[in-house]
Image 1: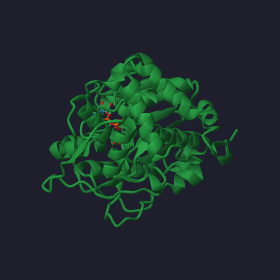
Image 2 (image 1 turned 90 degrees about the vertical axis):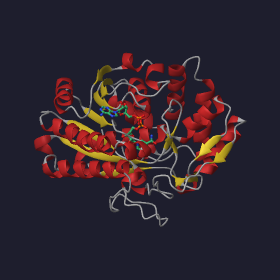
Image 3 (image 1 turned 180 degrees about the vertical axis):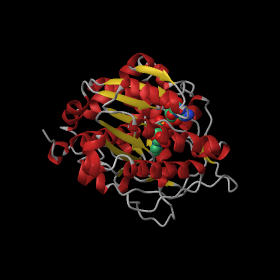
Image 4 (image 1 turned 90 degrees about the horizontal axis):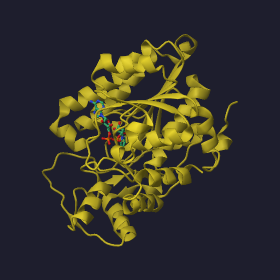
Length: 368
Ligand SMILES: NC(=O)c1ccc[n+]([C@@H]2O[C@H](COP(=O)([O-])OP(=O)(O)OC[C@H]3O[C@@H](n4cnc5c(N)ncnc54)[C@H](O)[C@@H]3O)[C@@H](O)[C@H]2O)c1
């Protein structure tokens, strides 16, 4: 049965589509020890999918992955995405129905410190995932997760469409733009939609903006920095107060990735391409406005402007056009900026007793 767009008008109906698509299916997930990957692991368990997952050990302390006892929720493989042989064996042994590739060096500032490692992980790692699929002799749909930073950003104030030029100033952004080019090349060279019957692979990429949500302890991200400043009773240092970003709660792009996977399963020839996922334009916020909302919701906290004119370049303005995902996938944002911040801070206020239970409760209330 095909699920038309109507089913996703409003969040009611999304859960039916996702359960129908993923329940009992085999999912190969990379990057499951990270922030988004840990949320996705819990969502797949909620949807009744079987997950085999591949990543480096959780790096952050505290670790969200450990808090939710992620290793007990999947076939947990510690491995490097740069290890082509090990990754390929893991994928071929598992024989997945879907692959969600999230593993990455995901920080702009780290990419200035370790550019080569960033390119190896983000570009070669993506090629390794796609290459393994060439030897997988069964139907499989794959979502390659990149970022809104893949566009050549001239900061003129226009929201980027999927057809806009790829680029990227810093090594992280350009590595993800390269990952998009690798994805497009593999799709055309080995998994061409017109030859779908021969290879049975749908390949799409997902470009989402900055996300916030409980469980993120990454350095150099605004909400984890805010929570650490509160804990240490010091003002939050804001590096780029005037920078505008398409912020979203983590569940929003994850719902987008899952809808994209569901659509690929329905019609791989139609949906094998790139999609943006972001908020409505009115929810694109300056960093300083996000921080003010966070302080308001938390009830305390302060900040100082720590912008440094000599800091490595980071884009000041970045917005996304999400019309393609809204029109074709039936996905749309469910939470505005204020609701996203409230949900995020609710997690950090209440996680200590039962982080997995709280995470699952937020997943259930979002999807139902
Ligand atoms: N968090 C955001 O705001 C955001 C925005 C847009 C796109 N993304 C993308 O979403 C994905 C997940 O981001 P995140 O915020 O969860 O990042 P994260 O840093 O929290 O997690 C990264 C994951 O990748 C794994 N990884 C890193 N290097 C690896 C390697 N060499 N081999 C195997 N695994 C490796 C880590 O172990 C971890 O599981 C990334 O592809 C990122 O670029 C994130």
